[in-house]
Length: 319
Image (cartoon, rainbow, N blue to C red; front, side):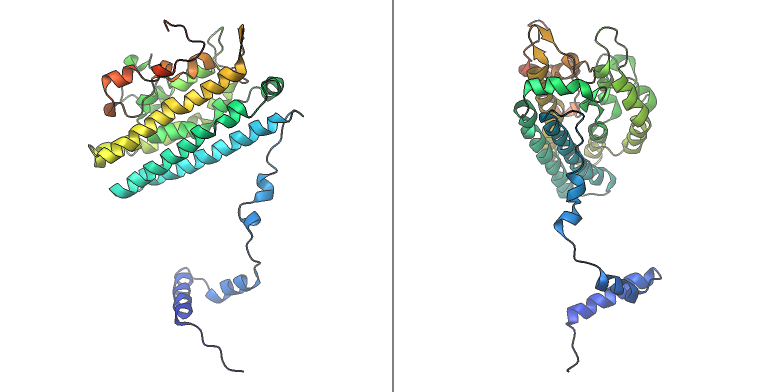
Protein backbone atom coordinates (compact mmCIF):
# COMPACT_ATOMS: atom_id res chain seq x y z
CA UNK A 1 0.00 0.00 0.00
CA UNK A 2 1.52 3.31 -1.11
CA UNK A 3 2.10 6.08 1.40
CA UNK A 4 -0.57 8.81 1.16
CA UNK A 5 0.72 12.20 0.16
CA UNK A 6 -1.10 15.16 1.64
CA UNK A 7 -2.08 18.15 -0.42
CA UNK A 8 0.29 21.09 0.12
CA UNK A 9 -2.61 23.28 1.32
CA UNK A 10 -3.44 20.74 4.05
CA UNK A 11 0.18 20.62 5.16
CA UNK A 12 0.28 24.41 5.31
CA UNK A 13 -2.88 24.45 7.40
CA UNK A 14 -1.47 21.84 9.77
CA UNK A 15 1.66 23.93 10.19
CA UNK A 16 -0.45 27.01 11.01
CA UNK A 17 -2.56 25.01 13.47
CA UNK A 18 0.57 23.69 15.15
CA UNK A 19 1.85 27.26 15.50
CA UNK A 20 -1.51 28.43 16.85
CA UNK A 21 -1.81 25.76 19.53
CA UNK A 22 1.92 25.82 20.28
CA UNK A 23 1.69 29.54 21.09
CA UNK A 24 -0.89 28.60 23.74
CA UNK A 25 1.19 25.74 25.10
CA UNK A 26 -1.20 23.18 23.65
CA UNK A 27 -0.52 19.95 21.80
CA UNK A 28 -2.06 19.90 18.31
CA UNK A 29 -2.13 16.09 18.28
CA UNK A 30 -4.58 16.05 21.21
CA UNK A 31 -6.94 18.40 19.39
CA UNK A 32 -6.74 16.27 16.26
CA UNK A 33 -7.71 13.25 18.37
CA UNK A 34 -10.75 15.17 19.53
CA UNK A 35 -11.64 16.01 15.95
CA UNK A 36 -11.18 12.36 14.92
CA UNK A 37 -13.69 11.09 17.47
CA UNK A 38 -16.18 13.95 17.48
CA UNK A 39 -19.48 13.51 15.67
CA UNK A 40 -20.56 15.49 12.62
CA UNK A 41 -22.43 18.71 13.35
CA UNK A 42 -26.12 18.83 12.44
CA UNK A 43 -28.33 21.81 11.74
CA UNK A 44 -30.69 21.03 14.62
CA UNK A 45 -27.86 20.69 17.11
CA UNK A 46 -26.08 23.81 15.88
CA UNK A 47 -29.11 26.09 16.40
CA UNK A 48 -30.43 24.07 19.36
CA UNK A 49 -33.71 23.57 17.54
CA UNK A 50 -35.31 21.21 20.06
CA UNK A 51 -34.50 23.63 22.88
CA UNK A 52 -35.78 26.59 20.86
CA UNK A 53 -39.09 24.90 20.15
CA UNK A 54 -39.51 23.99 23.81
CA UNK A 55 -39.29 27.58 25.04
CA UNK A 56 -42.98 28.40 24.63
CA UNK A 57 -44.78 27.89 27.92
CA UNK A 58 -48.29 29.37 27.75
CA UNK A 59 -49.98 30.25 31.03
CA UNK A 60 -53.39 29.23 29.66
CA UNK A 61 -54.87 26.69 27.26
CA UNK A 62 -55.96 29.44 24.85
CA UNK A 63 -54.37 28.64 21.45
CA UNK A 64 -53.39 32.15 20.37
CA UNK A 65 -51.28 32.69 23.47
CA UNK A 66 -48.59 30.60 21.81
CA UNK A 67 -48.59 33.03 18.86
CA UNK A 68 -48.16 35.89 21.34
CA UNK A 69 -45.15 34.21 22.95
CA UNK A 70 -43.52 33.18 19.67
CA UNK A 71 -43.81 36.64 18.17
CA UNK A 72 -42.21 38.31 21.17
CA UNK A 73 -39.39 35.76 21.14
CA UNK A 74 -38.77 36.45 17.44
CA UNK A 75 -38.75 40.18 18.21
CA UNK A 76 -36.10 39.74 20.90
CA UNK A 77 -33.92 37.76 18.48
CA UNK A 78 -34.13 40.63 16.00
CA UNK A 79 -33.15 43.05 18.76
CA UNK A 80 -30.17 40.81 19.45
CA UNK A 81 -29.11 41.08 15.79
CA UNK A 82 -29.50 44.87 15.89
CA UNK A 83 -27.42 45.12 19.07
CA UNK A 84 -24.76 42.93 17.49
CA UNK A 85 -24.38 45.51 14.72
CA UNK A 86 -24.49 48.42 17.14
CA UNK A 87 -21.81 46.91 19.37
CA UNK A 88 -19.48 46.53 16.41
CA UNK A 89 -20.27 50.04 15.16
CA UNK A 90 -19.56 51.83 18.43
CA UNK A 91 -16.74 49.76 19.91
CA UNK A 92 -14.62 49.36 16.76
CA UNK A 93 -12.32 52.33 16.26
CA UNK A 94 -11.49 53.18 13.60
CA UNK A 95 -14.34 51.42 11.87
CA UNK A 96 -14.14 53.05 8.45
CA UNK A 97 -16.87 54.90 6.60
CA UNK A 98 -17.98 52.01 4.38
CA UNK A 99 -18.24 49.62 7.32
CA UNK A 100 -20.15 52.16 9.42
CA UNK A 101 -22.67 52.61 6.58
CA UNK A 102 -22.95 48.82 6.23
CA UNK A 103 -23.76 48.44 9.92
CA UNK A 104 -26.40 51.18 9.79
CA UNK A 105 -28.04 49.60 6.73
CA UNK A 106 -28.18 46.23 8.47
CA UNK A 107 -29.77 47.83 11.54
CA UNK A 108 -32.38 49.52 9.36
CA UNK A 109 -33.05 46.31 7.47
CA UNK A 110 -33.72 44.47 10.72
CA UNK A 111 -36.02 47.26 11.87
CA UNK A 112 -37.89 47.06 8.55
CA UNK A 113 -38.45 43.36 9.15
CA UNK A 114 -39.74 44.05 12.65
CA UNK A 115 -42.07 46.81 11.51
CA UNK A 116 -43.43 44.72 8.64
CA UNK A 117 -43.82 41.68 10.89
CA UNK A 118 -46.10 43.40 13.37
CA UNK A 119 -49.15 42.28 11.38
CA UNK A 120 -48.59 38.99 13.21
CA UNK A 121 -49.79 40.86 16.29
CA UNK A 122 -52.43 43.07 14.70
CA UNK A 123 -53.99 40.38 12.49
CA UNK A 124 -52.62 37.11 13.80
CA UNK A 125 -54.59 36.72 17.02
CA UNK A 126 -58.28 36.60 17.80
CA UNK A 127 -59.27 39.58 19.95
CA UNK A 128 -61.45 37.55 22.27
CA UNK A 129 -58.65 35.04 22.79
CA UNK A 130 -56.16 37.79 23.57
CA UNK A 131 -58.48 39.49 26.04
CA UNK A 132 -59.06 36.11 27.70
CA UNK A 133 -55.41 35.20 28.26
CA UNK A 134 -53.82 38.63 28.81
CA UNK A 135 -54.73 38.86 32.51
CA UNK A 136 -52.88 35.59 33.12
CA UNK A 137 -49.69 37.41 32.12
CA UNK A 138 -49.76 40.05 34.85
CA UNK A 139 -47.58 41.92 35.59
CA UNK A 140 -45.39 40.95 32.61
CA UNK A 141 -45.44 43.32 29.65
CA UNK A 142 -43.62 43.89 26.37
CA UNK A 143 -42.71 47.19 28.01
CA UNK A 144 -40.08 45.15 29.87
CA UNK A 145 -37.92 44.59 26.79
CA UNK A 146 -34.44 45.51 28.03
CA UNK A 147 -32.85 44.98 24.64
CA UNK A 148 -34.95 47.74 23.10
CA UNK A 149 -33.78 50.15 25.82
CA UNK A 150 -30.21 49.12 25.02
CA UNK A 151 -30.87 49.88 21.35
CA UNK A 152 -31.88 53.39 22.37
CA UNK A 153 -28.80 53.85 24.57
CA UNK A 154 -26.47 52.76 21.77
CA UNK A 155 -28.18 55.14 19.34
CA UNK A 156 -27.90 58.52 21.02
CA UNK A 157 -26.90 60.63 24.00
CA UNK A 158 -28.73 59.74 27.22
CA UNK A 159 -30.22 63.24 27.46
CA UNK A 160 -32.13 62.71 24.20
CA UNK A 161 -34.07 59.92 25.94
CA UNK A 162 -35.26 62.15 28.77
CA UNK A 163 -39.00 62.87 29.03
CA UNK A 164 -39.65 65.98 26.94
CA UNK A 165 -41.43 67.62 29.91
CA UNK A 166 -38.27 67.27 32.02
CA UNK A 167 -35.63 68.39 29.53
CA UNK A 168 -35.71 72.06 30.49
CA UNK A 169 -35.19 71.14 34.15
CA UNK A 170 -32.07 69.09 33.51
CA UNK A 171 -28.62 69.82 32.20
CA UNK A 172 -27.34 67.74 29.28
CA UNK A 173 -24.19 67.05 31.27
CA UNK A 174 -26.01 65.91 34.40
CA UNK A 175 -24.89 62.67 36.01
CA UNK A 176 -26.29 59.72 34.08
CA UNK A 177 -28.01 58.35 37.18
CA UNK A 178 -29.93 61.65 37.46
CA UNK A 179 -30.95 61.62 33.79
CA UNK A 180 -31.99 57.99 34.16
CA UNK A 181 -34.70 58.89 36.66
CA UNK A 182 -36.37 61.06 34.00
CA UNK A 183 -36.17 58.79 30.97
CA UNK A 184 -39.31 59.02 28.83
CA UNK A 185 -40.38 55.39 29.00
CA UNK A 186 -40.82 55.45 32.77
CA UNK A 187 -43.96 57.55 32.31
CA UNK A 188 -45.40 54.73 30.22
CA UNK A 189 -45.63 52.35 33.17
CA UNK A 190 -47.52 54.43 35.67
CA UNK A 191 -51.01 53.86 36.99
CA UNK A 192 -53.57 55.87 35.08
CA UNK A 193 -55.44 57.00 38.18
CA UNK A 194 -52.60 57.81 40.61
CA UNK A 195 -49.47 58.24 38.52
CA UNK A 196 -47.68 55.74 40.77
CA UNK A 197 -45.20 53.23 39.35
CA UNK A 198 -46.77 49.95 38.32
CA UNK A 199 -45.33 46.65 39.49
CA UNK A 200 -44.26 46.19 35.86
CA UNK A 201 -42.00 49.23 36.11
CA UNK A 202 -40.73 48.35 39.58
CA UNK A 203 -39.71 44.87 38.41
CA UNK A 204 -38.04 46.26 35.32
CA UNK A 205 -36.04 48.85 37.23
CA UNK A 206 -34.97 46.35 39.88
CA UNK A 207 -33.56 44.00 37.25
CA UNK A 208 -32.06 46.39 34.70
CA UNK A 209 -31.44 49.90 36.10
CA UNK A 210 -27.81 49.21 37.01
CA UNK A 211 -27.11 47.64 33.60
CA UNK A 212 -28.73 50.55 31.72
CA UNK A 213 -26.71 53.18 33.56
CA UNK A 214 -23.51 51.20 33.13
CA UNK A 215 -24.15 50.84 29.38
CA UNK A 216 -24.92 54.57 29.07
CA UNK A 217 -21.61 55.33 30.79
CA UNK A 218 -19.78 52.90 28.53
CA UNK A 219 -21.09 54.44 25.27
CA UNK A 220 -21.42 58.09 26.27
CA UNK A 221 -18.40 58.97 24.14
CA UNK A 222 -18.91 56.44 21.34
CA UNK A 223 -22.66 55.97 20.74
CA UNK A 224 -23.88 56.29 17.15
CA UNK A 225 -24.55 60.00 17.51
CA UNK A 226 -21.06 60.58 18.93
CA UNK A 227 -19.53 58.50 16.12
CA UNK A 228 -21.31 60.69 13.59
CA UNK A 229 -19.94 63.88 15.12
CA UNK A 230 -16.45 62.46 15.60
CA UNK A 231 -15.92 60.97 12.15
CA UNK A 232 -18.75 61.42 9.67
CA UNK A 233 -20.31 64.85 10.14
CA UNK A 234 -21.89 66.02 6.89
CA UNK A 235 -21.66 62.61 5.20
CA UNK A 236 -24.92 62.47 3.25
CA UNK A 237 -25.16 58.67 3.03
CA UNK A 238 -24.68 58.31 6.78
CA UNK A 239 -27.17 61.13 7.48
CA UNK A 240 -29.78 59.30 5.40
CA UNK A 241 -29.24 56.04 7.31
CA UNK A 242 -29.28 57.72 10.73
CA UNK A 243 -32.52 59.53 9.87
CA UNK A 244 -34.03 56.24 8.72
CA UNK A 245 -33.03 54.68 12.05
CA UNK A 246 -34.60 57.61 13.90
CA UNK A 247 -37.85 57.36 11.96
CA UNK A 248 -38.11 53.59 12.22
CA UNK A 249 -37.27 53.32 15.92
CA UNK A 250 -39.13 56.38 17.19
CA UNK A 251 -42.13 56.67 14.86
CA UNK A 252 -42.80 53.55 12.79
CA UNK A 253 -42.10 50.93 15.49
CA UNK A 254 -44.18 52.57 18.27
CA UNK A 255 -46.96 53.20 15.75
CA UNK A 256 -47.15 49.47 15.05
CA UNK A 257 -47.57 48.91 18.79
CA UNK A 258 -50.21 51.62 18.88
CA UNK A 259 -52.07 50.00 15.99
CA UNK A 260 -52.04 46.67 17.80
CA UNK A 261 -53.07 48.17 21.14
CA UNK A 262 -55.90 50.08 19.51
CA UNK A 263 -57.17 46.91 17.85
CA UNK A 264 -57.06 44.74 20.95
CA UNK A 265 -57.60 47.22 23.77
CA UNK A 266 -59.87 49.87 22.25
CA UNK A 267 -63.33 48.40 22.66
CA UNK A 268 -65.94 51.15 22.68
CA UNK A 269 -67.03 52.66 24.92
CA UNK A 270 -64.18 51.56 27.22
CA UNK A 271 -60.43 51.68 26.79
CA UNK A 272 -58.91 48.54 28.28
CA UNK A 273 -55.67 48.58 30.24
CA UNK A 274 -52.66 46.83 28.77
CA UNK A 275 -51.65 43.55 30.44
CA UNK A 276 -48.95 45.19 32.57
CA UNK A 277 -51.05 48.22 33.40
CA UNK A 278 -48.94 50.43 31.13
CA UNK A 279 -50.29 53.84 30.24
CA UNK A 280 -50.35 52.98 26.54
CA UNK A 281 -52.67 55.80 25.41
CA UNK A 282 -50.05 58.40 26.37
CA UNK A 283 -46.92 56.28 26.07
CA UNK A 284 -47.20 54.84 22.55
CA UNK A 285 -48.08 57.81 20.28
CA UNK A 286 -44.70 59.17 19.04
CA UNK A 287 -46.09 62.69 18.74
CA UNK A 288 -46.50 62.70 22.52
CA UNK A 289 -43.00 61.44 23.29
CA UNK A 290 -40.99 63.43 20.74
CA UNK A 291 -38.01 61.10 21.19
CA UNK A 292 -35.50 61.93 18.46
CA UNK A 293 -32.07 60.31 18.41
CA UNK A 294 -30.51 62.79 15.98
CA UNK A 295 -32.21 66.18 16.41
CA UNK A 296 -29.39 68.00 14.63
CA UNK A 297 -30.25 66.11 11.42
CA UNK A 298 -33.88 67.30 11.29
CA UNK A 299 -35.36 70.72 10.65
CA UNK A 300 -37.32 72.52 13.38
CA UNK A 301 -40.49 72.03 11.31
CA UNK A 302 -39.86 68.28 10.98
CA UNK A 303 -39.34 67.92 14.71
CA UNK A 304 -42.49 69.92 15.49
CA UNK A 305 -44.48 67.59 13.24
CA UNK A 306 -42.83 64.45 14.67
CA UNK A 307 -45.39 61.65 14.47
CA UNK A 308 -48.37 64.03 14.11
CA UNK A 309 -49.53 62.76 10.75
CA UNK A 310 -50.21 59.39 12.35
CA UNK A 311 -52.78 60.54 14.89
CA UNK A 312 -54.43 57.59 16.58
CA UNK A 313 -58.14 56.87 16.57
CA UNK A 314 -58.79 57.97 20.16
CA UNK A 315 -56.85 61.25 19.97
CA UNK A 316 -58.72 64.45 20.65
CA UNK A 317 -58.70 66.82 17.64
CA UNK A 318 -57.13 69.40 19.97
CA UNK A 319 -54.54 67.05 21.55
